Structures are given as C-alpha cells and as structure tokens.
Length: 316
Length: 316
Image (cartoon, rainbow over all chains, first blue to last red; front, side):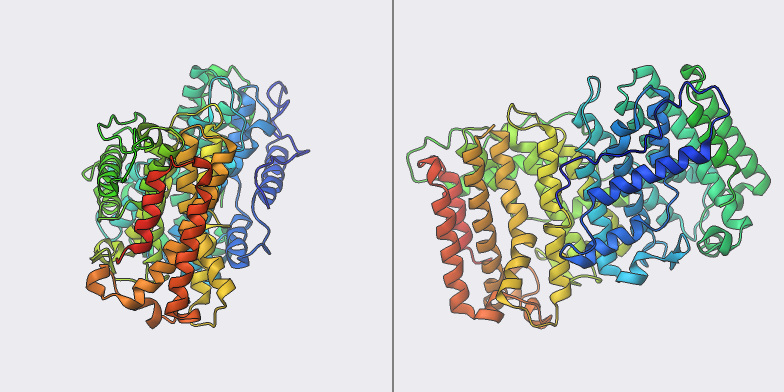
C-alpha cells in the first residue's frame, strides 16, 4: 500500500474547541482524537497481509495494542490552542505515536527492560521473537518519518523543520539518551538530578515534541511555540513522576503491566529516591508550571488544560 | 553539538569528473569520496564524549569501522553524471551511510545473524552489549533523517521527496523486508526467486536509493532518475551475488569477517542454490545491464561505470 496519500477523516477533535465556553468535554475529545489517529495509522501502515506479513503483523500488534494515544491528543490539543485543525495535525500525531510505539518495543526487549507484558498484552518479542521485534521497532521508526513527510508545509514551518523536530526529540541526545541513562543506572545509586535527566529525555522530549508539532501544524507564532515547549516539558516530567508513583501504588491488573517492576529491577524512580509524598508534591508542582505556561493562549487552550488535569489525576 | 549547519569540505570528488576524457581514476575518486563523507559524518555526529558518551562511542565505533563507503561513492558518482556537485550530495551520502551502518549493527545481533566480527573488528554488541547496540542502531537510523533534512531542496525535488526516498528504501517493504525474509529463510529451502526477493530488498534498495539521491541532489531530469534507478537496481543485485560468491571462495582474513558463515548458517545464497559458475555468470549479466542503463548519460557517467567495474572485480 502506498503511504503517499493522506487519509480523509471525519473526526475533527481539534476544531471548534477553542472557543467553547466550558466545561471542556475531555472524554469526547480523547475518543475523537483516538478514533482519528487510529484510522489514519491504519491507512498509513501496510496491511497485515502485505509481504513480508510477519513484520506488518508485528508493527500493527504493538501499534494497536490499546495505547492511550496521549501524544496524538497533545498534538491535536496544541493545534486547537493555536487555531489549527486536526486534519493538518493528523500526520504528525501519527508520526509521534509510531516513534512512541517503536521505543516501547525496543525498551521491552530482554537486552533492555526485559518486560513480558505491556498494556495487558504480551510484549512484541514474546509474541514474534526478538529478531522480528527489533525489526518491527526499526520499521515503525522509519515509518514515522515517512508519515511526517506527508504533512503539509506551512509558511513558518517547512518539512525540514518538521523532520528535524522529530529526529532531535527521538535522537541520541533526547529519547535514546534517556533510555541509555536508564539502562546504565539500573542497580546503581541514582541522584535526583540524574533521574530528572532521564525523565526529561525519556518522556518529556517526545511529549514536548508532540505539542510543538501540533502548534507548527497550526502555523503558530514563535511565542506560541515557546509556550507549548514549556507546557510539554512540564507535563512530560509530571507524567513520568506519576508513572513512577503508579508503579508502586497500583496492582499489575490495574496497570496492565507488571507493577513494582521498577523496584524489583532496582531502577531509579522518584518514590525510591525522594519518597512517595514528595513525589506527589513534585507532580503537582510540575502540573502547575504546565498550566502557567498556557497563559499566552488567554483561555483558548481548554483541551491542553483538560489533558494536564487528566494526567495528574489518572490512576493507570 | 548542533547538527544544523552543513560542513564545508575541500574534497569535491564528484565535480569536474564528467568531462575528463579517460581513463577514470577510480582510486582517487574513492579516496576523495571517503574523505569527504568521513569528515562530514564526523561533523554531523555528536562527539564521542557528549553525554551519554556510551551511545555516541557506540555509534561512532561502527560508523568509523572502515566501511567501504560504497553508497556515498554511488551517490557522488550519480550526482556527477547529472552535472551536480559533491557538496550538494554530501548530506544525502552521509544519510545513506548512517542507514547502512544501523542495518549492519542490528543484523549482527544475536537475535538476527549473530555475528562476532564485521570488517575485521568485533561487532557493536560484542563491544558495547546488546542493549547499547540496539540503541546505537536506532540512533543512527534517526540521525540519517536529521542529516538528510540538512540537504538543500532543489527545484524538482523537495525535502519531502528526499525523506520519502530514504524512508521507503529503508522501510518494511524494502530494506527491512529483506532482512525479515532472510531471517525467516534460514534453515529452509529457498528458491532462486525468493533469494532474488531478499537481495532486491536487503541490498539493491539502498544502493538504488543512493544513486537516486545523488541524481536528485543534481536536480536531475525524470529520464536521468529512471536511468539511475535501473543502474542502482542491477548494480545492487550484482553486488550481493558477488558478496555471496566471496563468502564461499575467500578466507575470513581476506574478507575481514567470518567466511563461510552463510553456508554454516544454512543461509540462502546464490552459490548454494545455483552453483558458483552460474552465480559468476549472473553477476556479469547484471553488471552488463547496469552499464546498459547508463546510455542516457552519453559517456558522462565515467564514475558510475568505473564503480560498476570495480564491484564486479573486487575480491573482498
């Protein structure tokens, strides 16, 4: 299947939201956002029967394993805050989800975190074997750039800008740097500063990139892009702190993955280094900073605000 | 280090060659091509000391392990045939070399071909461990797109075209498809048709892409792009058939990697399926077809011709 044409979509989660008075209907926004990104990913990816079928089955297995589609939602919400449309943000939302899924497949490998379950399902390598899992990750990473290249260019942001944005957030100084530091920190004493370094790169970088890409798809102003950067950075850190908290407070069933895994692996987490209460406090502080970053939108960032609230209060 | 600026280079292997009468000085061309691409890669990649140092050391270890730089040479030679310059082709030549190196690191992993040596040196995972080797491959794949985005756009070819070109040649329908089929074929009876399928994707696709990118960097005509496609396809197949032949006829010392490895692994190769003599004949036929493809260049493709000759006659 050629991925050269962009899919039409009837779901437009990011449009017309900005001027709605209140309250913001987040569940509806998330449902529309997820439906749009799922339909587009299904369109962009080769069929599961396309030769060689194994790799396409493996790619689709993890891509459609029930992920929260948080990064696409952030991308759509940022586009809405800047007066853009979901249609323009859609290829970029799909691209960041492909990057996220590839990183999970590789992180779960025996040579990395060695996880058997993810989102309540067997991890990719447990189903398809390590070789195919490595290749499925590689293919999703490659596909991300192919999909991103389908996006329109806008006056302020060219294809070069979009590709650089994704490549830098996913590269050896950001996403991959976080995983390296995480891997090297296992079983060692980790400082709070070092943990922040990991979270900034492993989680915050791609969330920040998702928000920025949404803004770019709306041809946002430099001031708006800076606001989205600050917002994405702080929401990203908050998100990971909460992930750490949930790992020690929730059961595996609630999480859909092996709970307490980080503790067992002697992995650096916020609760382990600074305790549970202080971790919760930090998550709230980070979320407050994320809200403050939204000021330049003068109340037009309802979707972004609702998302930040949701991420702080989630229990899985 | 920011990779956002393009390096200046004094080496210009692809310029002024086209009108030289004869004979073409291939060793000089290859030396200049290699020097230019090595200097640019060194510029584009983060320093080996940049945090986290492990990943940058691992990326550089394989990238500067003495590769033949065949794909960059093909890119420069194609640019020259279309009247272009090495400077314009340089970021694209670097990008394809990053893709090639990433694919070797991942192919060598225990879950894939399980190779201990490559180019006479220990493979990446033997030096850095499997986790870092997987991430170093991921990082080089990501870096390839970051570098490609630094290229200039030309009237006929936009950044979108360049990114799609690389993503499609490296994706699940081409480069990765070849590795999947190769992996799944091990220990099974493979037909000549199936073997051709593997070679077309695992080797030919990226060589073809290298030649096409060179042409695109020279703002080539559609007819020239088609000629480069035909040339790259046939040279790529010939290259892989010869690789198979060398694997059974040369010692490990001559090859710099474990000779006879394909036979031991019961891997599908041309000599195994159709015999050595017929394999040699096919390599010559493919090379002849590659030469025929160069006709539209009316004798201006000296570098491409010399490269094709060299690939057929090589003994390592």
